[in-house]
Structures are given as C-alpha cells and as structure tokens.
Amino acid sequence: MNEEKFRNLKELFPKTDESQILQVSEAIESLLEMLGEDKSREGLEDTPYRFLKAFAEYGEGYQEDPKMHLMKQFEAESQDMIVVKDIPFESLCEHHLARFHGRVHIAYIPLEKIAGLSKFSRLVNGYSRRLQVQERLTKQVADAIFEVLKPEACAVIIEAEHACMTARGTKARGSFTQTYATRGADRDLLTYLK
Image (cartoon, rainbow, N blue to C red; front, side, top):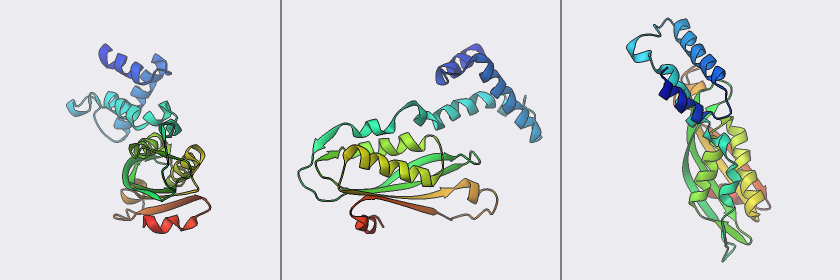
C-alpha cells in the first residue's frame, strides 16, 4: 500500500495505530488467499485498501451521537400525528458482517416540539451505520424519538432484507423481516405505518 493510501486510512481510522492498519490489511490479503485468489492479481492489488475505506464508511455512525439530529426543534402547532415513511437505510449485520437494507417508517404525536423531517433520516443513518441487528436498530430509533422529542407517543417499523439470510445459509431470496417498536400511550400508531 502506498504512502498516500496509508495516510488516507489513518485519517479514516484516527483512533487506530499504524500497526493495526497494516495487520488488518495483511489479514484481508490472507483471506483472499484462503479463498484461492492471487492477492497480487491486478483486480485485487488494492482490495485491502478499498475494503478498509468502505468499512470506515459503513461504520461512520460510530463517529456521532445520532440523537443530536433531533436537538434542533420547533414549536408544535398541534398535537396531530406526523408520519415519515420509506426512509431508506443500509447496515451491516453484526453476526456475519453482511449487508441488510430496507425502509424505516416513523409516526409520532407531538406534545410541544417537532423536528425537521430530514432529521429522521439522519437519525436512522446514525444508528444504521454501525454493526447492528434490526431489532436493536428499531429500538434505538424509537427510544431516541421518545427521549428527545418527548412526544405523546411514537412508533417505528423497519422492513429489511438481510443478505445473511438471502445470499447465504437458506438463501431465502425475497424474504423481508419486519420489526416494530412503540413508545407512549397510543399503541394504535402502528396501524398508520402499514
């Protein structure tokens, strides 16, 4: 790996020392060899660098507190329900480091404050750009909304396709998993998200 690429990785992983970056890079080369590949083949020469660079992006949620996106608030002019649907997300399953992706649907009934609609997408991205399980991701989004905005109630549904189930193991292509979380008094919010 050339010096410029090495510097780029140091910037992407500021808490990591140089020896760790080299160890992981060598481990990726060893994995390629375990698969039966020639690590020096033209298409694979920069794969350890590209993998580490991509992995830093997959884990960028660790660099922030996602709740901060809900801190900018506005006065609620009514206590009517707000629904934000089809927020796309990407994450990595912590069990297989395999991709899972899908959509998040959020509903809440404000009491005093509301947040800008784009903040919910930022909130979801902050939690999904970590090693995750869908159940925890659903809980984290619902808990953050309920804690920070203090609505009367909120509900979150996540629908996702998991590569650890569709691309390996049972190879159940086309299967989706749904998870639900509700907080507060009004559990009927879920009906508005379906």
